[in-house]
Structures are given as structure tokens and as C-alpha cells.
Amino acid sequence: MKEFNFDKVNDIQDHLDKHQYIADRNLSTSLFLALKMKKPIFLEGEPGVGKTEVGKVLAKIMNTDLIRLQCYEGLDVHNSIYEWNYSRQILQIRMMELEGNVNKKTITDEIFGSKFLIKRPLYKAIDYSGKFPPVLLIDELDRADEEFEAFLLEILSDYQISIPEIGTIKCDKPPIVVITSNRTREVHDALKRRCLYHWIGYPTAKQEFEIVNRRIPEISAVLGKQVVAFVQIIRQKDFYKIPGIAETLDWANALIKLGTTKLSKQITTDTLGTLLKYQDDIEKMDSETTDGIVQRAFAEANSI
Image 1 (cartoon, one colour):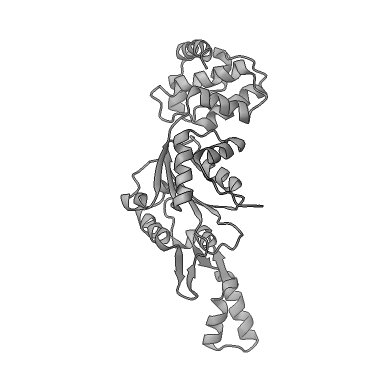
Image 2 (image 1 turned 90 degrees about the vertical axis):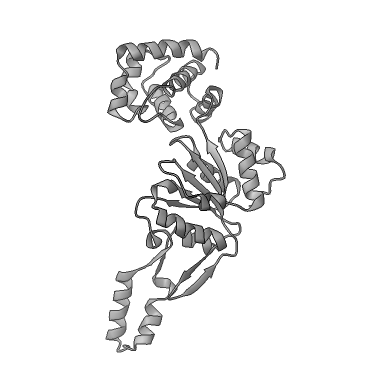
């Protein structure tokens, strides 16, 4: 397989489209520039708008591997770069002692070799030996601590890591870096300056209908438009957790499984748990509110 080199923005937009990712011109331009300028791209937006999917689809387009680092509170060097396989090291020490080989330097050289090293995502991306650079997806960076941000900034500066027992590992082919954030907190400006930035918002009704059609081809146009219209209205309400594209697809799938051909107050009430994930939000959808939104969705579906 060959690596894709894009000559213009339309090229990458067409390839995203072929892989069932509906991207607007702004996102396609940001991705094009990130690839051409060899810079990380920082994608920010509400949960469920397709940020993570960008990294996954980009790896498919580029015919390369996806290496994903899922961020969380407390993420550190050992979880993101490497750690030693302590149980295997202890076993090796005991075996060497049984063989009478108790020279301290020999034991140290042996147990701190590469075969005892557990490679984590950042190490794998730096030490990658594939034909084409991998896509390194650093997902939900805002969940990690600020200390990890500072450490990541160093990695992105020169794409190398130092391991005291082994030495410096340098990167032959810098990875294609995609960083995502749900903006639960602000990521430091120093890290953002290293990246190209793009905000991914919720799709328009027409875009979302196209996504539903592509992902769930068995859905009828009537039901698909009603589902999208309903979700678009819901997003204008004061809910704790606004449903994203993933919830739209889940709901549409659930309705099909139930043999639904058109929305109704009853079927909507019965399936709200696929769309809204917090009880406080569900409680706001009383009978009158739900019926009103369903009726409004019927009217607005005609314009999609």
C-alpha cells in the first residue's frame, strides 16, 4: 500500500467522505495544513461530535497504524511511555542466581535490557518502525493533569525520549499527532501553540441526516429526518449533557430494532435512555414537553 500525499484540501475532504466521515471545509483545511506543515492538530469540542473519529479515519486514509493514548487523571510517564516488567526482572534475577551468575553489573545489564521493557503508546509512536508514520491519537487531554501537559510538550518539541538505563530513543519518522479535548478545563497555551487548532461543533441538521443515512442505511428517510430534527431541538434545551452524534446513532438504531417507522410521544419516552444519559435531563422530558418536541420535529423534518 502507498502513503497518501494530498495536493489540495479537496483531496483530503474526498477521502474523509469515502471513509464515511462527513467533514466541513474548515476541518478538511485544518487537517490538510497539519499534514503539510507536519504539526499536531488540536481538536476541541463537546463530547460526541467526532473528534476521536478523526484520528481513526486519518490512520485508515494514510494506510498506517493508529496508536492511541487515552488520557485520564493521574496519567504519568509509566503509563504513557514505558515501564519495566518487574515480575519478569525478578524471575530473571533468581534464574541468574541459581546459575551462579551474581555479578551485579551483569545482572543490571541483563534485566534492564529492551526485552524487559513494556512499551506504552508514546514510546511506540517514537520508536515506530513501520513503512509510514503512525497516527498518534492523544485522546481527551483535558482529563490528564497539567504536569502531564508539560511532559507532553517536551515530547512534541523534539520527538525523542530518554530512558536512564537504555539511553535516548530518537524518532526517525515523527508521527501524525491528533490531540482531542472536551474542554472540561483549559489546556495550556504553550501546548496549543505547538499545534494547529480546530473546534468541532455539532453538525447541522443536513450533515447529521447524512451521517445517520451512511451509518444506518436501513433507516427510512422519514424516520431519519424526524430523529435528526428531534435531536437538533434537544440541543437547544438546557440539559446537563447534550446528546452528541453517537447518541443520535444509538437512538436511531434502537428505534429500528423496535420496528419504529415514525416518532411518537410513547416510543420517544420509552427510548430516552439511549439519547439522554442523566436522570435529571430525562425528568425534564415530561409528557407535555416530549409531545411538543415530537410535534415540532415532525414540522422541522420537512426542511431537512
